[in-house]
Amino acid sequence: MSAPLKQRCALISLSLVVVASATAGESHPCASVSDASERLACYDAAFPRPADAQAEPIIDEAARADSLQEFGLSREQLRKRDPERMREVMPDQLQAKVAGVAYRRTGERLITLESKQVWLLTEVTSKGQLRVGDPVVIRRAALGSFMLVTPGGVRLRAKRVE
Image (cartoon, rainbow, N blue to C red; front, top):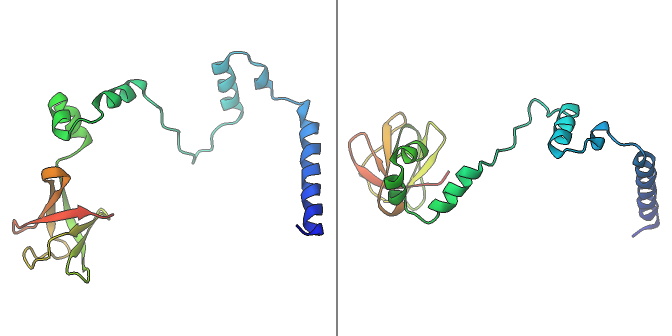
């Protein structure tokens, strides 16, 4: 390390020590509150969160316990346990309009939807021509795969890439 850099580091360290020792005797009034939840409320009131800051997610212990209980179950098993919740959480299909169609060198088509999702049609085929503005349906298929259904009813295997 060069001499000027060592001097700067030493000066910064000394400054931090001086500032720390000067403020060591001072403490915030909230620090004297003995109850933890009241002390937190005091600090929250003294230092409010900026308006644009996102709230931290609240950990729901009951939901966490449920997810641990359901860990390892298939979608079908979860659907049998609570069909309403599974319907709300994970739709079986998506309806959208095509915003763009591009081709890979291998002949596979990349379909961009108006929602900005990008899907790869994994089958190289001339069936199921798609144009910008065409309505499509993407459905869940076997073993976690997906099928894109064209306006003409042609079903093509699809994989979401974005």
